[in-house]
Length: 360
Image (cartoon, rainbow, N blue to C red; front, side, top):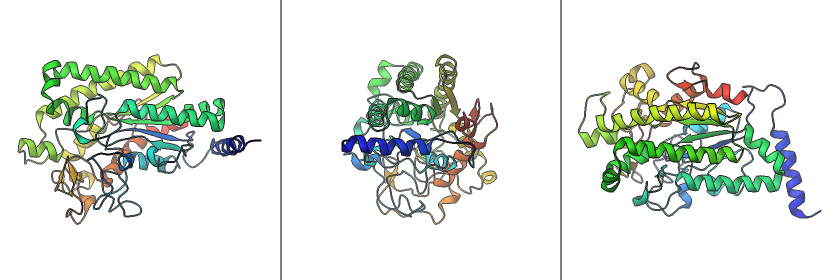
């Protein structure tokens, strides 16, 4: 027997050991978590790309598990990191640094990425969503080779696919791109994004993905970047242009999730309302344990991100925002718990929470 066949057999045994047998601590039926998106979920893929958009230096990561910068655009964990821990899985590693080890998942997210291919063009290299799906296709082929087509498809069908993207398409493209604004009204651009995203989700479905979490875009008009641009200082206030775009797009996104849930056979879809959780937290920070909802913990940076060794606040856990755009690890924990535990058909998740999805 050749070395590759022996390795494949060993990996198949590992995979079979990973498949759930009866109940575990959270009744999860999820062997892997695959993550797609932008800097809200990038776990370090941009470390391997020639880009201005990086977070692999201090003070990023100062409250992460190892208290070091990993490429995550925050001080601590990301929402998918917490979801992985709820699933009793390791944090999904950045695909570009995973060395092909994706049996328990991978993170394909890339800072600056968008749904539209032109998004992030001025920030250097990055992986738009279409390229992230190409990476997953590579990963699926590797799983086919190591596990065999049946076991590989079984793993993929039981895994959760977490998609959080679209923020840069507005904040870092449409509102900064006169050409797009001449060619598309905002409503038309939103429809274009939905059309592209629908097609890309169907591509993942064609690769046997069946369990999806689709996150809304964040509260784009309520972050420190928008408040700075519009010179807004009242706590809980939001810039109307960005906020209106986020709300309008999210309504269309929610409708698309419902459409796909009804038309893609054996699929399970969760709409995760990050926008609602963020706006509610910003408007009533003290009720959620945040004393600062407007000022970022790291206020100095470019491309909405911290400068290297920039001075920071003394307690990031009191802030909703880490820098001008990205939330703190504490907020990410709040959002992840709401996605995991929230009541079905509520304002946070629809039609059910991720814990329920994990058991399907």
